[in-house]
Image (cartoon, rainbow, N blue to C red; front, side, top):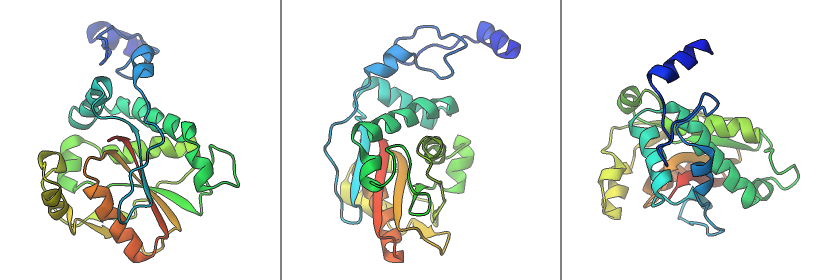
Length: 226
């Protein structure tokens, strides 16, 4: 605690949204007021070929949310995993999606033998470069809140260019094609794929294709923003 206090004196932290200096109790880089300004998406669902539904907590166009994701993903500010995951949890609760997936239990609990969280994997090079897989960190935070296990069912089998740098949907699909393979043979009935952002949906679609081909009955996508 004393160490943190000294570090805050030497290297003060400022809110991503309003640039206000943060105190010791504010563990991440966003104040409560700015966090509460981020609007959650409505009830619209993105439907794809291999995905039953895709759920996005917020819009990437929102300046505060966009900056949070950028700092988390590219500046390796790991503490942002908590507020970003909290947005996803808030969205699940608002839309009563936990009840939809497993209606016989309370709204904040999944049957751990029926459904699992699966983070979208990174290549080992990209994971080393960033210091972590942001999707894994988000999945771990979600797991604690909704009592649903995280299982790395997928692994990267090839290095591909970052999807964010490719604007054309067809090229995105080609770029990610064949990127994933199963890492385990025993599969659950339902999977929720976890990622930070989806735009064209090509990455989630490719991952869902592998899982559906292997026999998973239902595959959903859950992201921070679209």
